[in-house]
Length: 148
Image 1: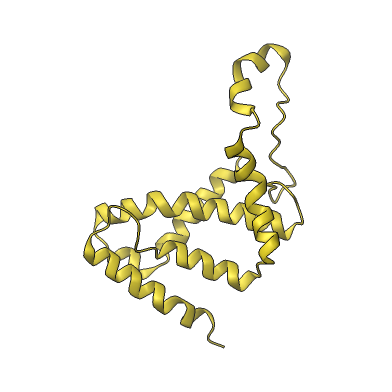
Image 2 (image 1 turned 90 degrees about the horizontal axis):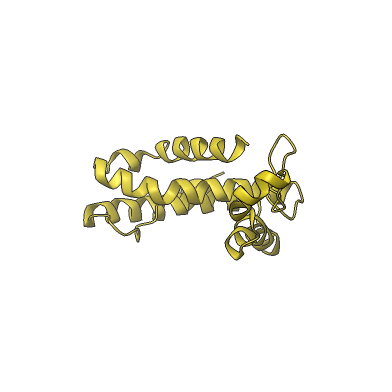
């Protein structure tokens, strides 16, 4: 499946669309990227699945995450560990969508949430300068999102 990888690429490009990203030094860009990219990619997949009224992760081509392994009996032994229904997989592919549904998250709120995630000044490994510029951007972002 290419969609999880595509979501990661889109998350990288989304992060790079923020001017504040270029105000950070290279080490801080790496620290921020490690946190933001996976969270934004997951939020993208979860929100898309929510908009499609799916209970689990689904993708634009109609494919969906399935915990049940479809491998043959021979391969099943080899890869069964990767396909077990774990609490982490259930939370990742089902519970986050349910939380979005319970919040009745709208498109503009989703966009604002992603921006807030990008500008998180509490990420461990940031310098004081990095925290200040991210906090400034985070404070300004809602104002920009709700201008009409």
